[in-house]
Amino acid sequence: MSTDAHDGTQLPDDAHDDVDINSCDDVLTHVFEFLDHETNDARRAVIAEHLEDCSPCLRQFGIEQEFKALVRRRCGGDAPPPGLRDRIKVQLTTVSFEEDGTQVRIERTSVETYTEQLPGERPTA
Image 1 (cartoon, rainbow, N blue to C red):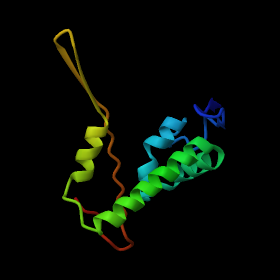
Image 2 (image 1 turned 45 degrees about the vertical axis):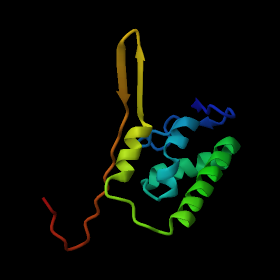
Image 3 (image 1 turned 180 degrees about the vertical axis):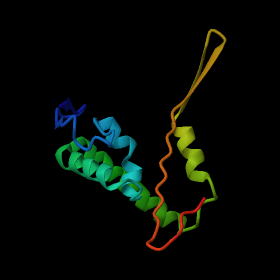
Image 4 (image 1 turned 90 degrees about the vertical axis):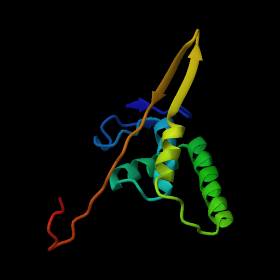
């Protein structure tokens, strides 16, 4: 079992082996995907269970939920430009710093694609 960073909540090591949610940081990293229903069922279940048991994460989740609602109200439903989400994600996962004339840039990105084939459809290339 691993221990949650905020409140000592125990998370089973083998809970949904295909899901890499082991701490509050992991939950908060995927909170917008959860809010946007862009996670698979296994990850969604792990995040939901964690939010039920962890009041600091639930509080942060509520803040993010309110933020999305505010943006939705203020933006009037305008469609974002193509690729905006990906550009924002890259900016949020990039760290750059310079020390002694040496510049370092670190990027952490991950992409998940889900494709559903309807019965009777032929696979696309």
